[in-house]
Image 1 (cartoon, rainbow, N blue to C red):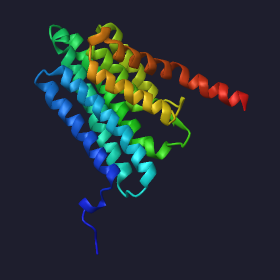
Image 2 (cartoon, one colour; image 1 turned 180 degrees about the vertical axis):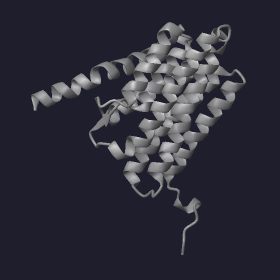
Image 3 (cartoon, helix red, strand yellow; image 1 turned 60 degrees about the vertical axis):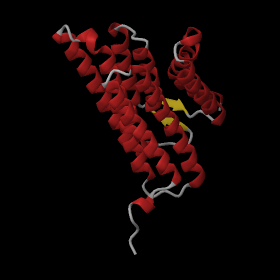
Amino acid sequence: MQKSMIKLLSVADCISLINAIFGFLSITIAFIGEIRLAFTFILLAILADGLDGIVARRTNESKIGEYLESMADMTSLSIAPAFFIYTVYYEVVSCCFYKHFILLLVLTVFLSLNIIRLASFHIMKDKKIFIGLPASSSTILIIIMAYFKVETIYILPAIIIVSVLMVSNLRFPKPGYKIDAIAAVLILLTIITDRNFNSIAPIILFIAICTYIIMGPFYLLMSRKKQ
């Protein structure tokens, strides 16, 4: 007897759905100008994305998990951050056609390469490393920059760089549970404290992501040389 589609869902799949819902909520809330809340929902989606991976590895019972996770991530890690950035910078670029065009072009590149990465992830995945920069890392980096409204001369090149890194052949280390836990705490503190306490939580999170992007490939290279 054929199973219903709903019965195919595992616990990890339900968390992936929550991830997608958070992404959708971020888009709709950004549309009405609630930038802080839209920022929060993207960060919550990233936490859900990390949690569904942990649950999936422990249960290993889903038949549609790989497909569902990629579709959820496309919403929360591709479309939602692109729309968030567009909303934040709309007033900045709306006065000039060429600025508006450049912003749309850059976000189109980000969206396209991000989707390519997500579609390729389960084919090229490795147990010990990430091939290309993880979409979650690139999303955190650029939405923090956008949230603090860093000038376009800085954020637009940053978006292009992380977009290219996502589909590159560079190897990045997979953090262990301790590092993941620290990252989750920093994300939660960023959500809770926002710009209070001199914006220390989002700044530390931003620096941590930058350090991972810059030092991650070198760490793997040095580890191989020692072996």
